[in-house]
View (tube, rainbow, N blue to C red):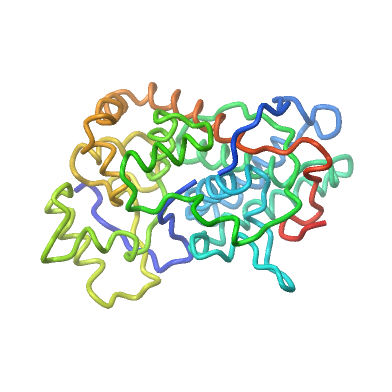
Length: 327
C-alpha cells in the first residue's frame, strides 16, 4: 500500500474532480500578452511557487478549480466569483462547496502580483491566470511543464444553477464519463488522461463511503485498501476528514494513478472503472508502464480542456479587476 493513507482535516478536498460548454475555436495564442505584459508567465509562476511552498494543498486545489471552471460555462474564471445580493454564484453550488480555498487564493495572489507590475495592471484576465497557475502547480509537483494558450476573457456572469448536471459525480461509469466529456469536445482519451489529476489532492470520506461499507465492499477495490479506508473513515466520521487520493505518491504528479488502478486502489468508482471496463483498460495499462506517453496525452488533454467555451469577444467577457467580483 506504499505510504498508506494520510488524513487531512479539510480545507482541501479534491473530491469528485469533475470538470459544459462546447470548446470553441477561439483565437488563443501562446504569445498573447507579449506586447502588454511580456513577463506575465514568470510573474505568475513566482507567485504560484510561493503559494505551493506555504501549503502543498495548493497543487490539487488549483488543478481541480480549473476543471470545475472550464466545465461550467467554459474557462472564464466564473467559478471564482463570490455570491452577492440575490445571486448565488457557481462556487456556492453543492458540487463546488468542497473546492479548497487554497485554489482560489492561488489565483487571487497571482492576479495581485501581475497587477503590481504597472504595465500589466488590468491587462491579464483571471481566466488566463488560472490556466497558467494550473500549469505551474503541476510542474512544481513533478509533472510536465508545457506552453499554454492565452487570450481568454473573464465571464460576465456566475450562477449556481448553471452548474447543474455539468460536473461528473464520483459514481459515474465509463459511458457517463465519456458522454459528459464529449459534450465538451473532449475524447475518451482526454477523459482518461484528465482523470489522472487524481494523482494529487484529497477527497472527503462521503465521496467514496458507498464503496467501503463493511457488508458490501466494492468488489473492484483491493481488500487491504478497503480496510485502510474503513479505518480512516468509520461510521459517523467527522465530515471534514479528507484522505489523499493517491496513497502511494500523494504529492507527486506522476503516473502512479494508473498503477494504483491496476491494483484496485482507485478511490472513486469513477476512477476504478477506467481499469475494470475492458474498453478503457488498455489505456490505463499503457500509461501505467509509460509515464512519457501519459504526460504527452495529459498535456494534449489540458490544452483541449483550456479551449472549452472560451470567450474572446468583448461582448461576451472582459478583464475582471477583482477575480472574485464581476466588473
